[in-house]
Image (cartoon, rainbow, N blue to C red; front, side, top):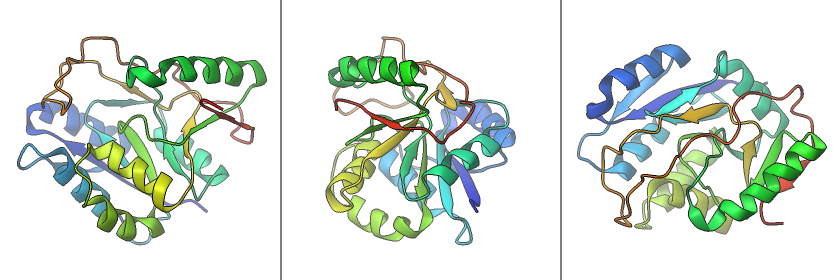
Length: 212
């Protein structure tokens, strides 16, 4: 049986949105203390309930569907050992968009509730099996890439497992101006929203690979 713990990783500049999100999903908030996304993300991941089977980390610009916890638990019950992203968005990363387009079309054609990729494309809303957290945090403290890339690298290169994405997404993204500069220095002025928002009739479906 899936038991969830949920936190919001948040920047003080987005206090109102973070507090509203935390109320909506009954979550604690882990605040950015030094404009360091990995520091905030690592503390958010570490703030898991040791009795939980899965720990969900939502960024403060996440917009979950109604009854998010119930839908998330049902999804995780289908793939309990997976790193799951509840958001699959438009525009970013640009090099993946053509492959994501094709996979989403295939998922729609066959009624699939899942897609997979060798990388974590977004950090907006993820669920991590709690037994993996201590080793993940230890390993992810070494790379110097962004928060979501570190987690995806651990899943790919250490565990050799794909990342799963729910289809539709259970979370949308509030497409406002970022509160912190991105490492690549590129503006984020293209639309960044969920490709499809909602939930499937069943989570027991095939998994469509992105780029496969």
